[in-house]
Image (cartoon, rainbow, N blue to C red; front, side, top):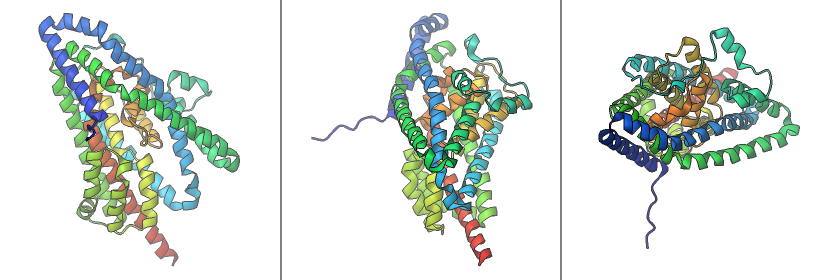
Length: 412
């Protein structure tokens, strides 16, 4: 007898989204806006709030441990020498550019995003007033306060310092590295438990949003999705085309044709790790040295998050506008900085895009509760951002391969 195929988590999230929309629309039509919103706020939204509280609870340990583990995993970077540093610099540079593109596109669309009648405490007081205060605030004065207050930039700095310290300590730091790796694995499992209840959280939050705003909110979700995909396409066409053309002397059309099978696989699987064998085959066919592709592509699957960076920026601008907050230039710079630094250790974490968005929202003073507004369509965001990440990994492999070949020729 054939076993029935179980529905994926993504399918359940879509079901939760659809059910929430339907129930919210029914209540809104049957009871009227005020009564429906009152019912949803008192008896349905609290269960969605529990889900968001669990997300906020796991954000700090996920960021702290995953970034430390990601830094520690680069411990052999001395052995691979220039390849490692070139790869990391390339990834961080393209992620920063992705953040800027995401912010520009989102700000162009901002006028079309709705201002919703949200709770009065939707926005916290801005945490930074100028660039100097922002830079000063990145560095913690003690270890505990950033963890208790969820000051995410400081948490990232703590992670980077301790991760580098463990690497430099060498053999004596090995036990600490093993402990971090073990706790990181445990934390990711806890994250997995929380993600499994996300369909319920999405259902409750979406029911409340629809009763609060009416079915008109659905058009805004389509708009923010369009905004993100415009950002994905711009980054792919501009940044990756220019990279392979300028740094590797390769025709952009030849590059996109060569990586197309991996891009399609990434779009359907939404997993950079699962796409690795296909990506490596595509890069090898394009002339990348197997040693280079074997190093760059797995590292990219771990730390390269251009697509997620664009998603975070678009999501942050959208949700800020929804709660009536106009982000300042300093706050937008914080988004770029936070998303870029966070790229080191989050790609391997289940639900990383959503967790990092919660972190980015906290860093600019927006209540992460409203993530529920767009999390129901996260799978659609994820298909595009994973594809972008995989194409970015391949472009890096092409460029690093060219640089290394040039260096070898120069030495010869």
